[in-house]
Length: 278
Image (tube, rainbow, N blue to C red; front, side, top):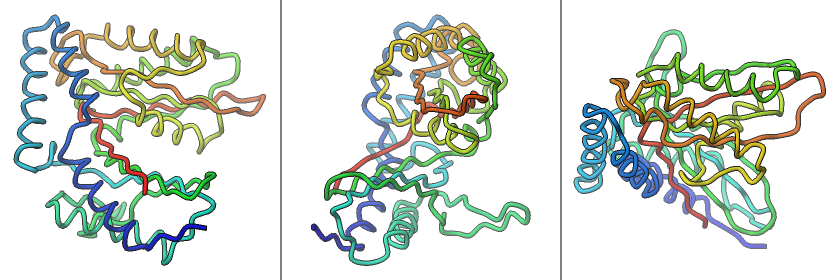
């Protein structure tokens, strides 16, 4: 049995919050560069150049990539042979609070109706899984309001099938237009139930840009959705072009025989997330 002090968790979460908001993931940066070489719109090329230049400035000057530093979404995989000395959830929230303060990150959590800002970006949106081993894997994925507001969930009848899902995903991106700050990363959750499908979609956003589903059925769907989304012409910044999506990722889970849930979660071009294993 390995032990881990809660204070260490706080330190790691604080650092991940800052790095996720300051440093664009390398695979996202490389994909933006590749898309720039293929972009057919002159305005689209200019916007992609601005996006990568913005990422360079943020990394060099240690400032946020975007003013919207998002709600702090934290995924934790806790080894069943790990004993945490202290309160795990409190440690995570203290890390978010510390990271958003020390990193001068915008704090966005507020009450739903009165809109009173809490001033600390708490509580974190925390997802916990118990896994084999004695390590703790933490992923912080700040999620901005513009892209999150474009999410969609549909409880299909099973007869909707493959084509129904593809049409729904493409139409969701079409309706989103410029709002999620394209080019976007498209996360798709298929299966599970009403609450599981959106979580699958959000988890799908953590995949590497060049990662494809291991099942060829879903991998082919990812490719078809990618092509159809980029034919929409929304383009970088929503001002037209051939680069509307950087990548499409699907996660699936078994579902009830009478239902076919599907959720879509979009990430802006920043696609922020950082992971560390402790």
